Length: 591
Image (tube, rainbow, N blue to C red; front, side, top):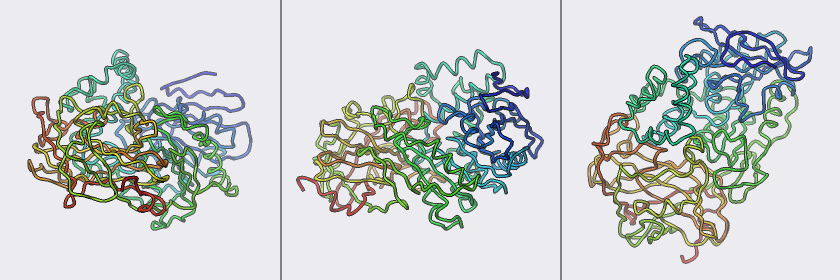
């Protein structure tokens, strides 16, 4: 067996009974040639194509997550793995997302015309390889029969690069540095490649996160990662982002889709939004053609039961690879539906799968923040109630030079650089700049499935401020395990298209999207909410002054005094999607 990584030399090799044609050229409409590896099982029968378009190397073929293409070939498919434009062996310049409409269309039609292909093409892949599916589907190539996007975004501003108007620093810098290392390899710059890759295994990355200004990070050279600087330049939701938004064009997505996501993936809410929007039938797609699997996984998980500090048990490994084969035997081979449930959700807390015919209905149940004026830290007096009462506001000082550290959660970062998933947050909650609100012990199980959001009525002494919120489950032994989190940049409180400074001292209602959760709070556990003004390095620090996120320096950073109100006129709360009778199930001891 030979390996040709990043090469354009067309060769042939075998993996057992599977033959691989390496670096097969596909000419795009503008003359650029992209290269793919084509896996064929030992059969004379014509076969449909399973296509993955990926920027991370066709030789790897996301086999760190999915089974190897040779395995899929043995299940009765011709498998095509293509380097996207400008990546590894393919020609052209890599510009994230923008060429994937046309290149996706052209590649699907090229694959359908390969020798011994039936003319049916399906796509699979995770993260960017999920985006290449969605963008190709929007271009509506005639021979695309179905897709299976996993852990990907339907809007690259709102659900990826910026959240609530705050720059997703760890993802953006981490992804750009990883892609830059590959680009340096392609150019033969071994020294730069080594420096960039080394950051993924040492603490170097933390030095980059701390570097200011963000639009001048020396290791991220503009000739290798021009897109990173474009993301900072386009810090408002403008046409740069709208032109490649899948969400704004979902009516054009007309093929069956199997959506796969993880509750601890940064695209969890995007996965759920895509399924629910397409599942309502409003775009002409039959309701039965959309399915979703949501597990307890983080980004790129190999579908593991071990995430963060949690072991979700053997049930957390549902056989996503096998589900893909069943999906494509139906849509590419024309076999009968295998009968998989349309909605398969793994509920953490219960650590078991639930099957539904449609997304389960829930009631938006409010849980209100309250305190005796000192909710600071887990030693404070913050509490959660089922109704709002008049109480004194909580006060804390935000220091941009010492932000609250990210600890677990949904950020798309390698675990070695920044922990991902559920962790005991008591060490974070020991800080006085973290407000902690905890319910009494629950009288019965509470099932929360769907989008979680918060309204925080707050004021700041700065001309800009971030407000963060986290939802946690406090177990019977006192551990505080994070479930969902979100952020809202004050300047984007009214519009992500036209941010504006806040007025110092004025109270605003900050709407914070915490993403989605699928969790059972067990009887005897407590619900907890954390509120602060930073979550670093998941999100870039706010300097407390109104400046574009790429331009401010440490000299701009200033302390800010933050007030969080929770009275009947300004009822700060978290809205939970509780299954069943939410009000009845949230009866709390002591109320």
